[in-house]
Length: 588
Image 1 (spheres, rainbow, N blue to C red):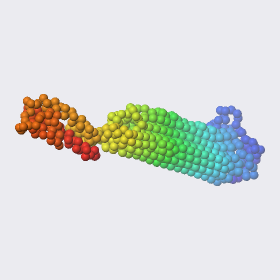
Image 2: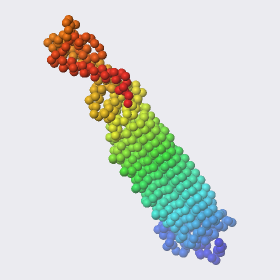
Image 3: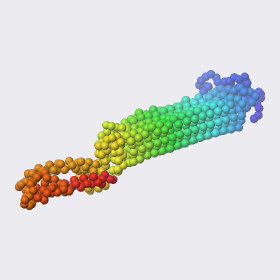
Image 4: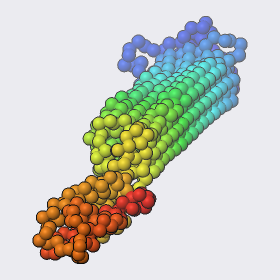
């Protein structure tokens, strides 16, 4: 670079040189807020114009260590510091730069460009020992490249505005920041913000940011690693957020955030790792699906959130692992499928007061979910199928008032049902909501839960209804036999019913045959044993015993028909009891 002498400098440049040499700031602003606005820099007069080579010469002067402080200047020409080692701090305030700045492969102690306007910035592989601040009104109408840059302190784009619609607004892929990275306080970007593979030693702050890239991903953060927390409260995103394979040492919060991306994933977090809490709550809304398949989280909080992806997955959490709990309490609203397929949740899934809507399709997919407690207590019945098939739940909390019309319980196992106000008859109705009709395992599971709770009568009733549904489903033509087995011996679970029926029939037979003697009862032999209506009725009813009455006395008239009827009833009761005692009816 050719060294400029005093004779080569304009008056403005001499002013800058003099101020910097004395360790002071070179302030070329005129004191009028409207005139000094950096966005008007293209119209500034020569009295405020400094050539880029003058700034470069100051930065590369190794003999002087005072910072280069320049405010309100229009910098013309290309500020090309590629591969350079800057010996001084660069502090630009409210400056206008005509051409993009190149800091590619450069090394600097500290750079701060507050409120500056420029066409673009190429700082790929830049190394800054302390802070890099492009903030508070910093505006780039083109790409800002920080790919593979290294910042030893804080990287701040707080309040910056990056404008490169349809392309990349910020490329910070594989960036390394030793402390915090700030994209907050009114940070805006039109175009993709890429921090894929970045390493942040402190927090990543996105609070209040506005990101716009409607045709694609607005924030690409795949494989991002943040030592502490990521905060995106009140962020507004038009486009997607991708956090595939990212690792966060603290919490990930999007409280009050809004993400909109139609026809694709709004938030893609498959294989995401969050050590503490992932919070999508308190006004959080997404238009488009949230994908957390294979993610590992401390806690997932969805309180007062609104997930909207009608006809698709509002939340896809297949094989999600959560160390503590998933909470969707306090008016979580979901339009579309809410899936925790195969998820493992450490303490509980709490969906009290949530609402789920996916008409004609799957509203809740909890197939193979594994959790110690499930609070399935939405504020109204889910509109759509709820799938709990093959899930493993310790304690199931539910309420008949909010049971869905269709509920898949095949393979579901649980230890305890906590709603003690739900009757056995209501639970049988619960099992009857199975799509496709009868399935045996849900009945066995419910009966086992009742037995474990010491409610043997309830368990027996469930087993009886299982047999009734089984025979009704597998042999619809045998309804009469099915009813007889149900009413007489309860499929072997209530053989005492046979004794009750026997007593009723015995009483009936005693009355009938007592009135039939002697006019309709004829002795079969002479002499005949004494006639006893009770003994005669027992002889007719019980084919396995012989009291001698039926052989000695022959009925005629209506008594004959009654004897046939009671004899047939006796054979039915005897057969049913034998089958019940042998356990034939209990199998299947």
